[in-house]
Image (cartoon, rainbow, N blue to C red; front, side, top):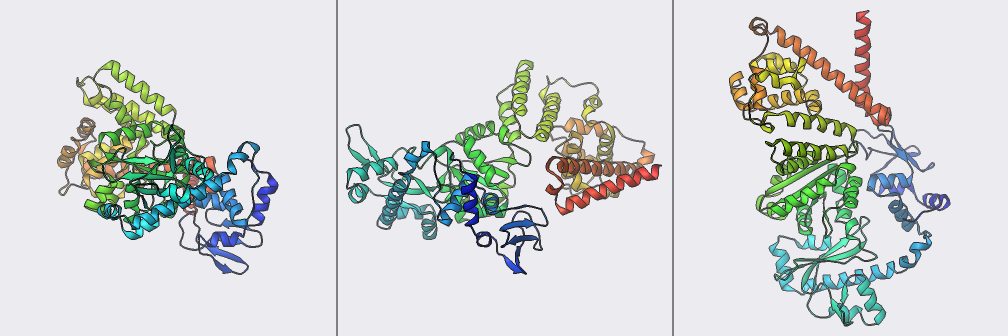
Length: 578
């Protein structure tokens, strides 16, 4: 990676009009001498994002994000420092000096890119004259507008590229180095993509870096990508990332699918945050690029054996990338479906509903691992636990690591993972649900229709359900109860009996407080009061930890107000006790 001096960086920033840069992406309104907008980095209804044309800096009075032109471009476009600097330098007409090691190949890049662009233009022109290629796109439901938007084309049989662009030996070598032509052992040149429809592969800045061809007559391989070139490094490129940035910002997440055509069909259907790996399985660099684009990544895989194998490889490399604040989820489509086929058969609404069911990547990895072991056998259970711990130890998020360590322990102790011999006393299996939360869950299982349960803070319960087994159990019981038309203890227990931890629910339901206290609702009310107090305490601790780790400025205005309220309540309780 090239390194640039402070002087050249300052020169690029000085030559950049920050107001114009931001206004091209976020509509600014002038008030006094400064410009204002709703902050693009957090949700708000009133404008608190201020841009100073004098100081050439921006500041949000809501989330406190601030910086100069480079900072804004890196944050808004999800670019690296070098990518942002090079983009601003291009716009300002400043030529950046290069390191000696990269200077030689860099001199050829403009010529290579120009040759690639000219080749694509010929392929686009050829498409209009190729009925069989147009018929193929039409059969896949791709519209003329989408063909134009994605720069799709067709490489005809024959020597079209050689005849029009490869007239000199130097031009032919450029075409080879750009990945358009191939060169046989005997020195003959041949057109790499002939007889295929063409996809244009662009980097994150929208610059053409490679091509891909798909056969339409059954020839193999089905897909053919550009080879590695000075412009194209397939392990670093995500197809359509340049087009997906607006959709990623709007949705707050990026969707990775397996095929180019899947991406195109999704964008055409309005799901415009989709990208694809470029001619290779998802790698470390591409996964990190996805997280630079958004803190929430969804990996969507086809519902076949190859799709599951690809998912297993992807989640296996994820732990070191799962830093605090990042979410990685996995969606498996129904057997025999891919995004393109599912959208054409069932529509975007069905696909969107399926996306909502994407599952945490760590869950998926542990399920793959469990499927490879016979957990009824002690030696294989031990091996499973050892491999699972090795995976969890690599998680970069300490909170996520602790949550799954606890879950691993609970899963290993669960009845369906043991020898199958049932303990004579089911209540002994409830050690993870002991204390006040076990009492709360037991009361709910015995009297789910009691009106007092409306007072439970369910929003906070859902927030912390993933951190403690007992909270998760109560949240699941509440979720199941909401689907029961005529709610009763019997109906609820029967429904929960089908859950993986059904025996534990039943064991709790068979214990409880005195019938007299419960009949009057006194015990439920007392337990709910203690439960809500504990949930508020957990929320206060959570906000306090976030503030300690990232600074109070990392909290939203609502979160800071909530934290102040918790602290005031805590001080009030201490004062009352004195």
